[in-house]
Length: 369
Image 1 (tube, rainbow, N blue to C red):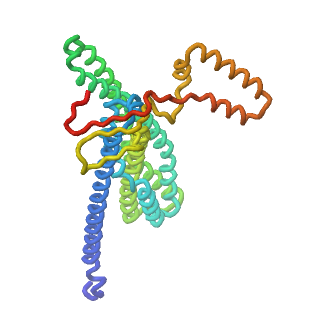
Image 2: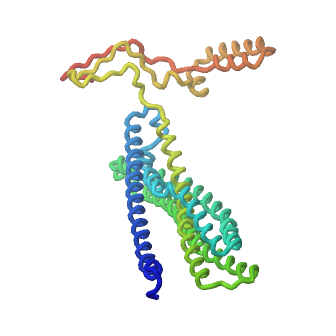
Image 3: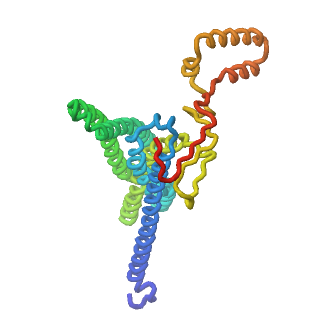
């Protein structure tokens, strides 16, 4: 009434204004957050792509046999995009837990201890979420193998298009690429079905939690559900649905980004071209100078495989070496295991230099063959 104080008389107006301020502040802060996260994800994708590209230019010749052009292209495009997608959902992994806790506190103030029934329903759904996330992780890991093979075959066909046309290999190569693509699409279809079930399951979960909570609230406490409690609880359960939906999506993105990060880490761990003794003077004239160089076919610091080491020995060296090893084992058979380890280390064969003391000087404008 008009006899009430202004704070009470205009209560509806200032509550509406306060609600508008809060909603506006929420929109501004969320926009700033998504803007920063988008910038962070773009920078992450750029960093991964540029790192893979620079690494591909510095790969040692022995390491180039472990990867293909198709795999490098996938690392720069597909895997970098998956890492970018996860960066957008990064803070959901910890922020979602705080949102769920806050909404459960609100439900506790409205429904009392019966809100724990809804929480129990949600917690019972977590194992299903974990199982689906694990299966999606495995499917993504197997799908990238088919993607690598498809891109590898396509690049090889394009690079050798003259031979493909000359020998009429279009149909066999097309069938092979289609087989890899079908296997990839099969994995993608299974992932899409699981993701759709995942989202439908999480969308329906708050409804079941609210229904179970209201049933227990009515029959266990012998209290009626008023309109204020009913609609406030429904709004709280509806708000609870958002972190419950985005949290599983963040877990799925994390599963994909984990596979991509491992693939990128393996590639970035390959050995590079030896930079020891190499200098580059940009101000000097164009020339190539090699002084007292020692050349190897492979890395001299890595032992050769047993098959390659044995194939490099002739029959006399094999027989003499085997007799020496047998005698040394007989003499040291009664000693400790440390000596046995030393003997095994002495048997390692390292690459021998192909050329030693190489000196080359190619001046600017000189013709070298």
